Image 1 (cartoon, rainbow, N blue to C red):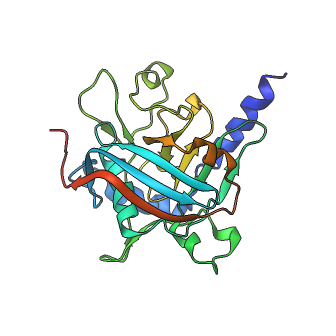
Image 2 (cartoon, rainbow, N blue to C red):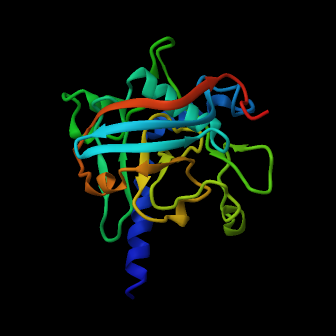
Amino acid sequence: MTTVLPQVGRALAGFWLLLLPLALGACAADSGGQSLGCGTSSAPCLSGTALVALQTSKGEVRIRLDGRDAPLTAGNFVDLVNRGTYNGTVFHRVVREPVPFVVQGGDPQSSDPKTPVTQLGTGSFVDPSTGEARFIPLELSFKSEAPLRYGEKVTSPTQARNLRLTHERGAVAMARSADPNSASAQFYFALEALPELDGSYAVFGRVVEGMDVVDRIQQGDRITSARLLEGGTLVKGNPNR
């Protein structure tokens, strides 16, 4: 019994990573049979690595982003950092009970103090040049494969163990709705190893400094600023060819 309750709690908590409204997820799925990935997305891809600093209410967190194994997901994040999208946004969901799970934020609409609390966690990045929400597909990299996989969850434990980027403590990954192609701006920190999420959510970086800060973040704390410290070369097309 003592091992079942934490597992059930984590499974229920995992449900809340499906954040965006179903309507937004449906919009993201309209790509039909189009190919996914670098060069086909409106988001740029990251070449190499990048180091990003998030100044939060509790202190600074530094994240190393991986452009080799998550070029599109990491590139999208760098682009949003450069645009100032995360400045002033709220950590709207913090799950530590019954066991440590995630600290989640990045909803662009949360930077507006007039946004109702009940609406936090439902927003996505809207590209001002088009007036449309930007969505990116689930992006996974495997040790035994050269090409990355897009838009398809992995349910096999054997395949999940072959992922290059996994949910270790300090991993940074994208939140999304039930549609695997509906990630936009919201992201989360893994508070401990979460292998049950591997293959379903795209990990794109890791906390390299300030995990103690992440551990202190409470629901309602803010990202006061996000800035690129080094790297961060953005390209259209696959940077790993």
